[in-house]
Length: 223
Figure 1 (cartoon, rainbow, N blue to C red):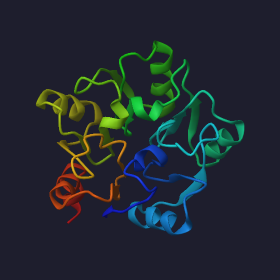
Figure 2 (spheres, rainbow, N blue to C red):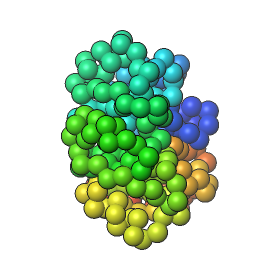
Figure 3 (spheres, rainbow, N blue to C red):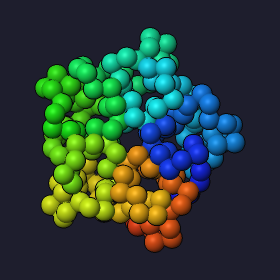
Figure 4 (cartoon, helix red, strand yellow):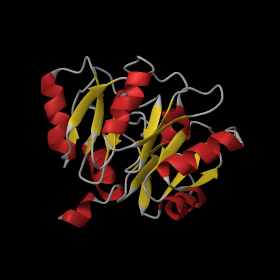
């Protein structure tokens, strides 16, 4: 299912919510009506939480079916909650807190910013149980903000060149394409949430943008 709705009052849905094929982790202040919309669209239960005491869950974490890598300032109660969800949990070593902005991952692989340390890359590899490739994309290091990826497909910033799309296909092991959301926003990772069951994109997304999202994330295969 694909929906364009106002979840957090601005287009940056992916900054606030973390999603896998098994669960959606949403902020405590997300109203119950919006929580239900997330659950219905992505076909997973939603759990209210935080990372480092912050509602910026999507920015401060990256997750797949195996685990979740979080800000080094994560709280003990948050770690315990994520473990109870069946996830391996690790704090990323170093000074970078916005791990969700600099890492894109599914169950097959991860692309990370090139400035991450070897320790940080090893932590991501072991926690998410994936091979990791470090590189810039479209001249930027905010990989997680530029890519929305699931186990069925990926959508990458419309400014990506074909070699970057091909590279993403190889790492993630799925097909994908370039596109925008929210009427021209290229930070598709920051402005959408998605799993293998569905996606929620910024409210102002146009019909053509929605069609591209649907195709890139593999939802047309379900029809």
